[in-house]
Image (cartoon, rainbow, N blue to C red; front, side, top):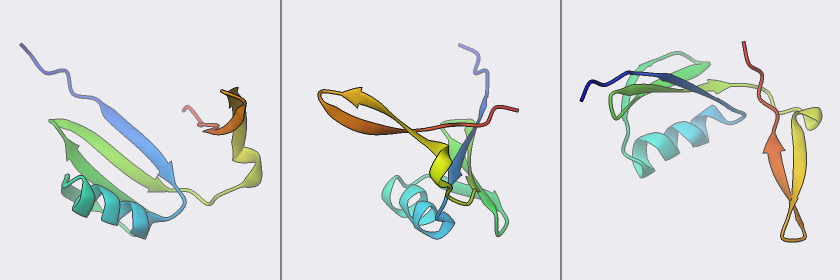
Length: 77
């Protein structure tokens, strides 16, 4: 089977906490980084966490089992 690598970018509003989670909890191998992003080896793929300031209008909700579940609005580019 041939691997078709992909790049997954995830916006985060707390780079330090997320870096700790991906590095120390999930034990993902950290690659390159800057003060605004960190990339990881995600089973041969590239997972990148990018700092993005939290904004109120970036969150929508969906009703699930009678509760509003937050759904971030992602920017596709």
